[in-house]
Length: 269
Ligand SMILES: NC(=O)c1ccc[n+]([C@@H]2O[C@H](COP(=O)([O-])OP(=O)(O)OC[C@H]3O[C@@H](n4cnc5c(N)ncnc54)[C@H](OP(=O)(O)O)[C@@H]3O)[C@@H](O)[C@H]2O)c1
Image (cartoon, rainbow, N blue to C red; front, side, top):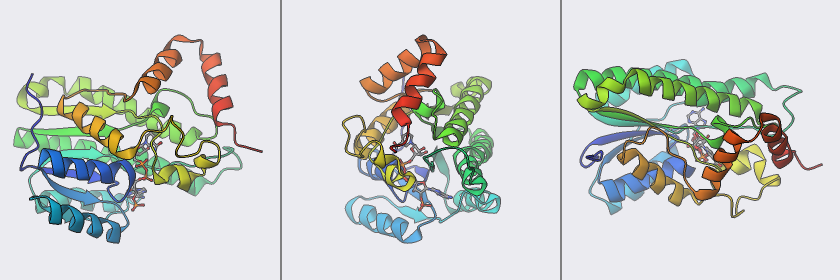
């Protein structure tokens, strides 16, 4: 089966200012020789990435800052990206979590998590799918998480947002299956822990240090994500440990799975 070919095409990546998104951008430019539209809130980081990539690879990088917590920014991103270039692929990668007891609730923080991790992903997926179908080709990659399959006490809203992103993407995959023959593909990537700023920003690194052997390096995760995307995998889980965790979660009684997750994520006293 032919792989996706990104060469000389344009790929839009959300959450490209750090972590997995930034590494996917670097990988796509270096290995796939594709042009990039990078977005996130931190414009300076994106400009830095543009400079770095354009000075090392013969590709173009366009910077479109957006706050995906804001509906109007999501709509504007679609408009500006499609005006900037013919977008061949969208990678919905931007995401955040919070760590700690779910109550007392910080509703603003929870809304942000739902807006960025699910609502923006949902809106951009639908906008771009229509665009891809109209143009006769295109590919969508939604980044979910192991937390899209397993309840995660102390990160409940994050896990809920990722479950939503997963079932939404899996349902879309089936609904749009006939379009694969026409060159439109829907894929997802569900990593476990990755050594990125997300661990520090959420406070998760207080429980599990970022350099734990269970956390994948961001460049390794990025390479696996793009290779799976090229193979049009509708769900890809990187790494033997993550695959084992998913297998156990699917086969053990649910009460044991949730108990183990509570133990693994219980915040330090
Ligand atoms: N790290 C892990 O252990 C892990 C595990 C499983 C899944 N994932 C998933 O992998 C994806 C990437 O996360 P990461 O680990 O690379 O984290 P990261 O280094 O913290 O990067 C998150 C990215 O999302 C962007 N972002 C956050 N809030 C945003 C907003 N309101 N508007 C626009 N962009 C926003 C950030 O950019 P700005 O701050 O500049 O806006 C940043 O570029 C996420 O979907 C995450 O859920 C991560």
